[in-house]
Structures are given as structure tokens and as C-alpha cells.
Length: 434
Image (tube, rainbow, N blue to C red; front, side):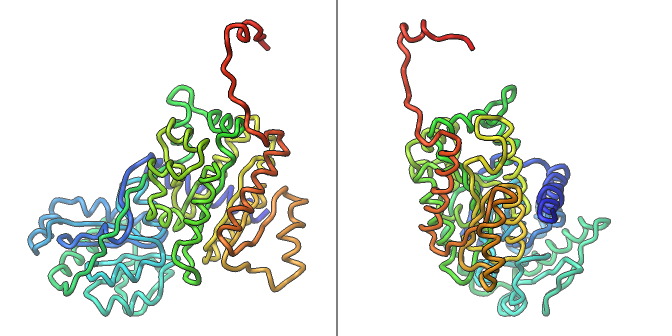
């Protein structure tokens, strides 16, 4: 009950309120990786999970008065870039480029090109204070709940939020002349982000006939094998981003449509998986659907809190019909191959109790208890129709997901792809209206 309240209450309400405040995301093109930093502009990195102040910083960076101040110190303009979940928030709604995922926060400072890094809560490394002092970067903490030794605290308050944002931009501008050696990697990649439930609904049916029927129909006829959510953090215990991209490549090659959020989305974006051209990596059925709709085979659905969008989408699939009467019957699966944060466990649990099986990689927190492990890996399925599984090998995890999807297809009686039949006139005459 607690996990259901967390997912369908806390997480979903947070996502809906952010959409009300800042707008529902729509597909948008942008760039990703450290190459988005600019040597001739004032660079400000926004990192964390609370989107209120970042939205105001985006507005402040467009202020002509502040842009003129930047030009006065020798910069051509003001460049914003995001890291972690805040990056996903301002990417989807404002098109702000993404400098990287959680494990690139120190690397961004090490380019020598970052005038200011603004952080709030979650996934913020305490070592940023030490790293920033080795360069000219000003590190700003903005939450009353999370401070860092050596950082400047500019606490965010709603009543004067815009002035706080302007002060951060002004201090970043003043830092620009203090730069020393700048080394910005050339690596950057295009991506398409912003696939909310509303966008997918519209994309599949248009303004007047928006629905999930096109998705359901293509799952039933076998062009799309099923749907998988690949979410979660980047983990320093494994090769950076490799587990995410390996799982995703194997899934789309086997005609599984993939939805991504959080740092998993950023890692996939850096490998070019979030562009329509990535359909060339997909199996023939998924590729056909992607080319018809004009979408990538891997859909960027937002930040970690936006995992609730995936619940809404899965519920819409059930409501549309033809794929069971409950989430536990739909050929879908979730996984967090590189999970690291405790919130990943909370998110995974509300998916499991909603009826969606979830897999974790790297390590699993219950392996020290045989009783609890037996319950989460099997016993819980009797209650909610889904369970956890643990698989540290990315290829094996992908195969586990595919096997799970195939078992759901078999239970629905759609395990074989429907043969495409071209009706001649004689066959048409025999058709009956039901």
C-alpha cells in the first residue's frame, strides 16, 4: 500500500503539478554530452532534481541586460547545460542541452569551462566542493536540506526566486575572466526528448483520434514484441553507461519498444539511441512502426519522478483493450541495470505492486536474507501478479526481459505474429459485418 501511494500518489502528483506549472513536454531536439559546453560563452551547469530554480535560471539567462554584461567581460553569451534529472526537466520543456549524467558532474568542472555549478538535492557528490576549488568554478548550493563544505549557499525561496537566479548568473559572468586552461571534449550527440503520455497519445492518433490503439494493434500483430522501461542511475561500480546501452540495443533489435527516464535516458542519448535514425538498429517490425510514425525506437519520457508517466501509459494500453484486463497481463517489463540511489528501489517497488515485473543489475539489496529474497523474487507475484528479478549481466538481463514479454504474449494468445493477408475482391465479398 505504501508503494502504491508513493507511485500513484506522490510521484504522479509531482509530475502532474510540474506539467501544470511549466508545461507538458512535447518532442524537442537538443544536444547531449560535454561537447555542449562553449569555450567562448559563460557556462552554467544546473544539477539536481528540483526544477523551480532551474526554470528561473533559464529565464534569467535570456535577460538582455545580463547577456550584455556577459559580452562586456569578453563572452559571446550565456550557455546553460544540465546534469542528472534537472537536465531532463529543462531539456524536455526548454531545449537546454545536457552536459551528462550523474557520473559526469565532476568531469564537467574539470573542463575548466564552467563558471558556475548550481546544485540542490539528490545525486550531488560531496566531492564537488573539493573539485571546484581546483578550478575557477563557483559552486552554489540552493537547498536548506543539503549543504556542501566550500560551496556558496544561495538558498532558494519562492518569493524572491528570480532575483536568486539573476544573482547566480551575475556571479557566473564575473567568473568568466578568471578562466585558465580550457579543455572541452568535442563529443556531442543529437537527441529527441519530451515523450509524455499526452504526446504519445497524440502522436499515435492525431488531434481528433488520439489513442493507444495503434500501439496495441502493433503489439497484437507482432510488429512490436512488447514494451520495456529502462530507467535509473549510472553506477560507478560498472563501465559507465554500458549496461544501459547494451540492454537497450538488444531489446530494440528484438522489436521491443523502449521507454527511458533519468540518467539511463542520458546514457542512451549519448550513443545516438534517441534519434529517429536509431530505427536502423531496431528489428524489422519495430523499425517499420518507427518509420511510419517518425519516432525513435527509444523514447525519452523524462526525469526519475516522471516514471509515473510510464504507469499512465501502461494503464492507457490496458484501457484501450486487446492486451488483457490488468497491468500484470500486458507484455511489458521494467529494469534499472545500473541502479544506485535508494529512490530506484522505491520506484521499482511501486511498479511491481502495480503489476509490472522489474529487474535490477549490479547488486540487489535483499540477497543477505533468503526469506526476503524468496518473497520479492517469487512470493510477491501471488499478491500483485509481478515480481522482482536480479541479473547483473546486461545481455542476460535483456534476454530475461524478452522471455518475460514472450510469456505474456503467449498467455494472451498472441505469441505468433499475424500473417499479413492482401484481400482480393472475392475475399472482400465474403467479409461479414459483426
